Image (cartoon, rainbow over all chains, first blue to last red; front, top):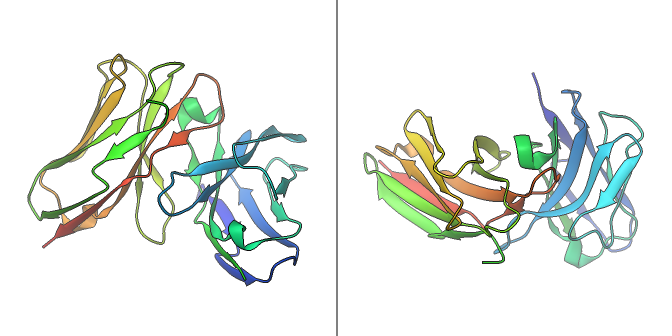
Amino acid sequence: EAQVTQNPRYLITVTGKKLTVTCSQNMNHEYMSWYRQDPGLGLRQIYYSMNVEVTDKGDVPEGYKVSRKEKRNFPLILESPSPNQTSLYFCASSLAPASIYGYTFGSGTRLTVV
Amino acid sequence: ILNVEQSPQSLHVQEGDSTNFTCSFPSSNFYALHWYRWETAKSPEALFVMTLNGDEKKKGRISATLNTKEGYSYLYIKGSQPEDSATYLCASGSYNTDKLIFGTGTRLQVFP
């Protein structure tokens, strides 16, 4: 089944404790993105990647890192999480730029930083 | 319009009612308008991608129209069913970019 797999689904952590949210897709998509969803706001892009070893900042990249060492994986790293990073996170992938084809989304990771 | 705006924010209808929502988007640098259906505890699923002024798309009881000159799209649901209950997101994209600008969604609840 074609899908984007995120882990974990839920995570509660403490301020400053490094964490990684994994994302993997099995559709051989070139493009991958991370978005966050906060109440009263639309999904906002954190980082995106156009191919292996090619990443760029989205609209809200502060406090996050990403890497794209393999085509299928695009982990999101929070080196020192803070409470304002409490949010619902979505990984997404696309065959071509998302403006053309749109995204396939993962199931989401609900992160709480205390 | 600088952002993608959706209205209404939420909608409650009875089973069998037809309904529609609006998405307004910036018409400058516009390439495509996307609609997604997002059920609680699941991931958003693509419904439609539209690019041309006057485009109309249909999937079962759901259809959408696009007006790029005035910067709006309508999503219609004919004969709403409880399983249509979800948040409907629209998003605008510029040409050849890997970013979509999302609205805050319209949350639809259909009561039996």
